[in-house]
Length: 287
Image 1 (cartoon, rainbow, N blue to C red):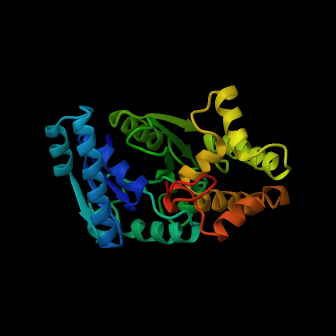
Image 2 (cartoon, helix red, strand yellow):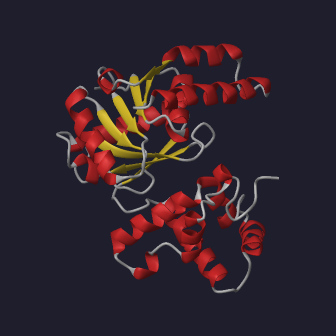
């Protein structure tokens, strides 16, 4: 395969739907798959709302949006979604067992030439490549949230990923106006999330130790370090459940008691205070 032409994105949540739309806006025939038809309808509604706003703000033209939607196909049949594509980007729940099951299925359904990518922000792709017959064609493509705005993709290879696979994925990233940066060795959390995890862990340590309240920690990080959001604001944006899951995965990876989820995070999750999506996290979003 000399170039990637047809794309399938698996998972119609925020990440999956926006990755698919970025692909379609860039001229690629794109299938967006989800096992749940209602999730596809929700994705279609959310994308149309977002792109209508972009048209009003003159970020894109109505013609560009119409053309993009003509290239975007919604599919709840996995075999149809992956049958003729050159690249599959998986963007489902951050659960290794569920991802491995999906990779087993698509390995049987997709053409031999097809490259498999996982959008996982923490799980190394070798854990998924191991259940396929094509580990040389498997990578991480970690898009950043929200994919329609953030222009960076972390591309992570495993020990068997070929140079050709990496170059094809890098070329695709360039074609959709995203900068693909290659990591030549796997490591939990990659680059951005490992640094973010360290900042978040220290912010929680300072908060739980009574050194400062979370509002002041956020304020200092924004003013002194020039971050657009403080660590607690960012947890609210991405979700406290995600923060818990990432810490839990990190602890399982290292076995280090210090890597366990902070008690403050556990308390928030148990209370259902997951951040912006529930209206309450560290901050109140209901007013």
